[in-house]
Structure formats: C-alpha cells, structure tokens
Length: 161
Image (cartoon, rainbow, N blue to C red; front, top):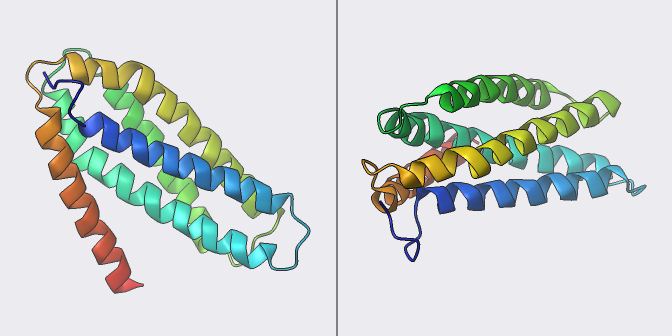
C-alpha cells in the first residue's frame, strides 16, 4: 500500500479532475459573458476540455482500471466507470463535430460537465479509497506510468493538430 506522504496514481487522477473542473467553470463564465469573442473562446476551451478528458479517460482505461480490476473483488464501480466513459466519449464526439458554439453546444458541454462531476465524485469517494486499500497495487509506481502515458498521448495529439 502506498504511503500517503508519496504522491500516488489517485493524486494524479484527482489533479486532472480539478483542472478539468476549473475549465468547465471557465466555460460557464464565458457562456454568461456578452463579449463578441466569447463564441470562439468557448469553442477553443471546449476543445481543450475534450482533449484533457480523452487523455484522462485513456490512461484510466489502459492502466488504472485494469490494475484495480485485478486488485479488488468488487468491480462494479469499474464497470460503471467504463459506461460513464462511453457516455462522455459520445458527448465529446458531438462537441468536437459542432461547427459553432450555439445553445445546443452549450447544453452538451454543460451535460458533459455534469457527467464528469458525477464520475469524479464516485472515483474520489469510492474507487480511490479502495485502490489505496488494495495491497496488490503500487500506486506510487503507477503514477509514474500514468504520467508517462499521459505525456505520450498529449504529444500524439499535438502532432496531429
């Protein structure tokens, strides 16, 4: 079990959660703004949110969830998280396909934020404590693996942008 003095995989994932939550808050502030440039800024911020969520979901699906699935008996939380990821990915695809930041675009970003907020609460309150209690997991080493994969995925996104 990881000591709480060392930053672990759950800390890394939680930092991602906080960063995306701030982006959703910034988006909401832009939605309430009357500035002419708000539409373009919203499109850019929504794309940034989508990119962050795609990377985050991928590292969870490739590394964190499989390791956790092998370390705990109750895997229903992981199954639910997979379903939540699928729903989020569907909304992300719709947001990325949109041509402008209209009312439906705003609604999709808002609902995505609500999905993510629900997902984050479950991970933080239920999944992370189980991960930290699992003796089979080295969450400190996993953090390094998650960070490396995250950087690799961001590099791939930048290369194709």
